[in-house]
Structure formats: C-alpha cells, structure tokens
Image 1 (cartoon, one colour):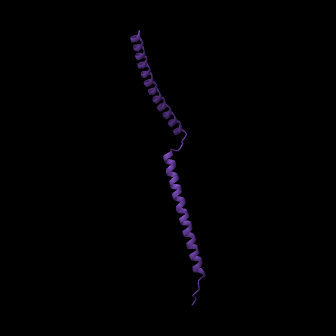
Image 2 (cartoon, rainbow, N blue to C red):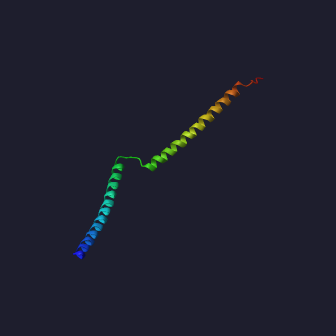
Amino acid sequence: MTQTTNRFFDELAKIMTGATGAAQGLRGEMENLIRSQAEHVLRDLDVVQREEFEAMKAMARKARAENVKLEKRIAELEEALTSFGKGPSKTP
C-alpha cells in the first residue's frame, strides 16, 4: 500500500505541476489580449502617448524659458532707447 500511495502522490504532483504551467500560460495570454484591446481603445480615442506628451512638455518648457529671455532683452532695449532719447540734444 505504501508504494501505491507514493505513486498516487507522484502522479498528483505531476498533474499539479502541469496545471500550474497551464495556468501561467493562460495568464500570459490573457494579459497580452487585455493589453492589445486597451491599446486599440486608446488609439480610437486619440489619446496622446506618454512619449509624445513628454516631448511637448519639454518643448513648452524651452519656449517659456526663451520667452523670459526675450522679455528681459526687450525691457533692456526699451530702457536703452528711453535713456538715449533723454540725453542732451545736439541741435546746430
């Protein structure tokens, strides 16, 4: 009876190992299917991808920095122009 019991448990272990492998394979297939469907829905909704969003964010940050520089330069030029106009006039 001992040998029969050991054999029974050996067969049961093999079945459980096979079931575990099948379950893991099924899980992977389901994840791929869900991911594929989610990507399809997002494409249909015209949702921006993360990479595109980050690129636009960087471009906006650079444009804001450039605007600050240009505003400062315009203020300096206006001040210089105002100072130039206030200087002593040289009329003949």
